[in-house]
Image (tube, rainbow, N blue to C red; front, top):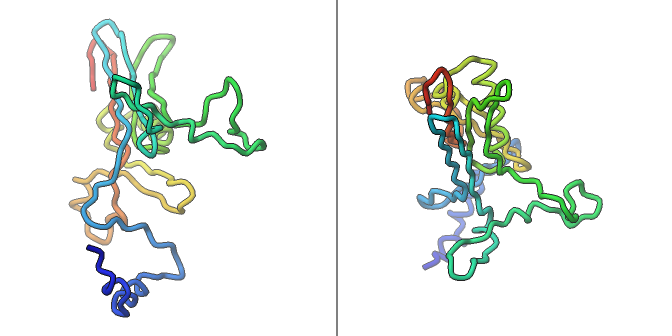
Length: 201
């Protein structure tokens, strides 16, 4: 039942009014304990001969194209949504053209030899997470676990917000005033690395 009387009451209006801040936009609130949605899965595997697979699957919003292949139960993805119908847009629909998207299963090679397969999930976080993960690994000389656990930032597009992936255990011991104001965990990653005769990941 929708509590119409409560929603139209002056008390509720006053409660909503207290949330207005003319200096900043309010972050969207999610009623109840809804955990949000997710539509991307990343998997990687490497064998002892450096045969590797780096695989990502994402049906995209709003639950893919809504079309199911007859007799299979497979939902077709909806990455065509990223095309623009504006003829002047750089991402306009054209023959033989792929839409802008973030489906980027990664592999790293050194001197022509396979070094690592990796990937992250999280919409637009994927290219951002790839770059930050590789910077941690290559420039900051972190091992795989450190590179995955290291704090990352995520630009959230046009809604004016920036989220940060952080190490929850490290933040647990911080004083409350030093913790992120809007903690959000995102952009998990799975790397597999072949080197020195050992398979890591």
